[in-house]
Length: 410
Figure 1 (cartoon, one colour):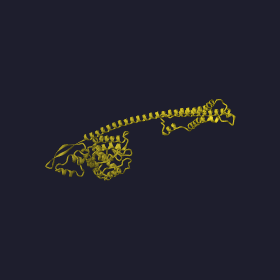
Figure 2: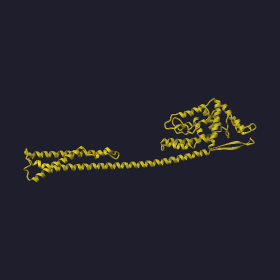
Figure 3: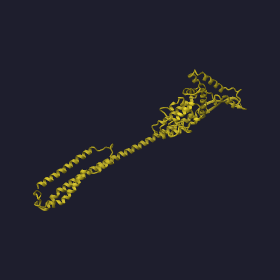
Figure 4: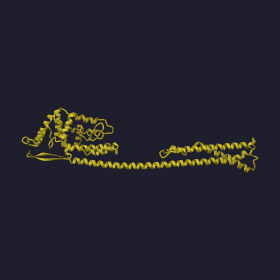
């Protein structure tokens, strides 16, 4: 009996130690529970719901204990070699069976009960994790809906601003007027002068003609155009003759030609010019084919036009709301569709002169990347090597986002 008591006490002590180990181990895991910022993934959930090797060993031990309890009366009531294990003289057989089976059944019950609490504890952990995960997903979905709604609101505001600026662009063109003059024709003869007004997009046609007339004058004096001489051409065209004379008083040859051309254009010798055809022939050397006082300047017309157009393009190209290149191009194509061929030609000349160098430089690529002069008919430009080189520069400049050609006529 002494040996049996010792063995039974050791078994109970080992079981108690294992239970304490499991308890403190789970308390440690509970202290490291993930929060809502650490949502369990599939591996983590599998780890929580799976049984550890210790639990499996205890379950096996519990089943073995129950099985052993059924055969222990037969084994322990046999004649024993050692008297310490002789249970044949322990009283009634019922008391013997009960006394021998109860310890094993109790041990198995302790194991199973502890495992049941342990599994319930892990189930509670799993439920908590799933609840936290569901809360986090709902929060992410709600935040995503709020972000999408805010983005749609910003896009609507952006489009509203864009179409308002587009309307202002059209208004700027419609308000353009150049008050000029022409002569009455009677029997192919030029007679009295009368007022003639050029309005809207027609202004760009006559302004292009005037600017290229200036290029013709200066290129003949300077032999060829370059960056400096082209800037003089644009200053004379944009600022007018009076401002040009103040800025370049030493250009006496150009000044004298301009003065003579203005006088001949405004007050032609009607005794010499007998028809419009004769007048065109008379003006063919300077190509003064426009009906207003030449070289008076167009800063009052083109200044705010180019500023507003540049601001519109910049607000789209640098938008923080519309960040995708193709989305930006969708709006810029709508804007570019409002520009006539002569508008794009003057826009190109404006950049070439240096007055509008922000259209295309190291910082901005509104011509090459965003194709604002994609419809430029460069064959209609003033024929000069300097201008052709600049067209080729734009055509061959390396780009990052544009996929098509620089010019539609290439």
